[in-house]
Image 1: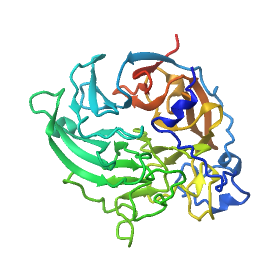
Image 2 (image 1 turned 120 degrees about the vertical axis):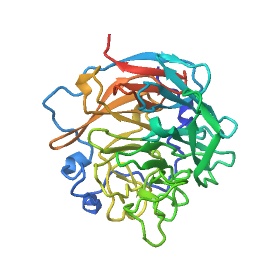
Image 3 (image 1 turned 60 degrees about the horizontal axis):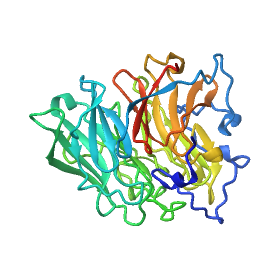
Image 4 (image 1 turned 90 degrees about the vertical axis):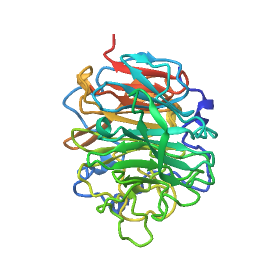
Length: 417
């Protein structure tokens, strides 16, 4: 069953508050010349046809046969994330928007939460709440993990917690320390909140543009603001330090924490663990959703174009030079409204999609595959799930899960019966 129009106003909506004065026109002739594509970028070899969304031919059937959806958990309170600690236990940690972290252990949901932050978390406005969780790469040794949530004032809080010394299935709620608070004073949407440790050991996290249609405060293009950015910090020293090779270190008027900018709401992003490539799903405005890819060993500093561009299309104003375009987009037809980023698949249950990036749409429940070939990127619809997809998760074996906000369910992508 497709999501009704009502759900377009729920968590992760694309904020379809139309502004008739702002055009949403296709990429104009010659615009590609103003899009600066790094020579080491995975989009550097794309043709003009590919930049405008044309798919490339493939030597194997694409998309492959759809997978099945096997329900693993039901009845969660608006799940927003599923993360493995990668500590050898096989446990999966489930985020509930209302502020609790639950544990899925040996196929069962434990009755007591790992951590309950409901007294600190502000869930007003649909897009606020407990939004991100990342385990320290040395979690098995130091027991540290990091959460992101919106607080009572609507600000974005990233905090460090530790596991209990006496029970590995419980955290110590009294041991919190603030890493970073980012003011979010005006609107309740576009909070970002995803936390991911990169292959370099640094903590990356995404911040939305601060909300409101069209980024009215111009945060995404303002290097003096942390909103509308992908940030990169070193949390090995409390509260954090800035890696010296961040692209804007030493630049006057720029926040050194910034790794990339020109993002609207990078709700979910992930690193492909074998390659180190970074996949960013950036939620669009009224018309287009986009996938950005940053290659491994990239030096950062990309400007992904918001609020001048929405996908491959001009959104407003005079487009500046030096923008990095997405590798794929899709439009808001047939009930689509808000992209939910996933993962590159490296499990064993679905070998037909090995090495492909899996992502979905919150409103329509559609799931797509994205793959890179010798001549460019190819995207195809794969599954019509009927779910309100808030997030994907991946377990220690590389198998993929889908989270449904409406039912509170967790579903495993598995071979179709």
